[in-house]
Length: 308
Image (cartoon, rainbow, N blue to C red; front, side, top):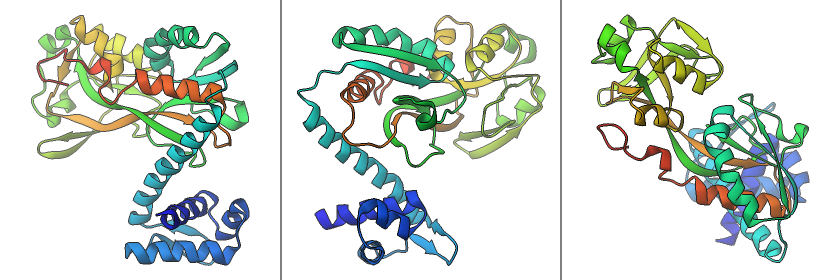
């Protein structure tokens, strides 16, 4: 078992560094030792994990799936080690935290008083920004982010699922009718989120497969709560995470559109730079986030016809 963990750690470091040589330096091993560990891992699994060429390395599909699991295993091992070493250390000092504007305003900020009550020596510098920041360059200790990480050197702890659905105001649907299938969206005003990686395409997953709806947005904005407010005012159909839409739907200002369809689910992560030992203040924040944002998030309590 320990040999397997060591081989997985070497494999993950090779992927992070993009090179067996650089990985060997970071691990304090020889290049041949690292190469043998990865080769033995591939032999045990019976599949190739890396495509090797003279210029670059790339992951196979099996390698990508294993790498994602290795990240979680390594993060948990490092967290357990850090936790054991910091049990006697009371979290204190300034903790720099960043997250998206809507999630920070609607959810994170309301819970921070409880964290600070628990740890009187802790201070928070909270920065809300929908831009993906460079945590190391800009000096952040921890971030709450949604979706896959662009920077694979960061450590990510999965917290909660993030569902993304379509919604519109009842008055808008009374005027224009409710779409009954994804094709009907071409006859409706759709509001666009300018920071979406998919641009002006909604990939809707439903019982009959995936439908890619390409649209010309009537309005584009870089903030999800602002778009939801415009949709509540009757401007058109919006797709947003339920952690934004929930309060509008509970008040009846928005209702779900095409309830059988959703965009591909994402997840909320606590993200922090690698380092040993993990600072007690960062561990305290992550423990708080794990307790607060669970696998059955409070914002998805039932508020429309179908359970969420």
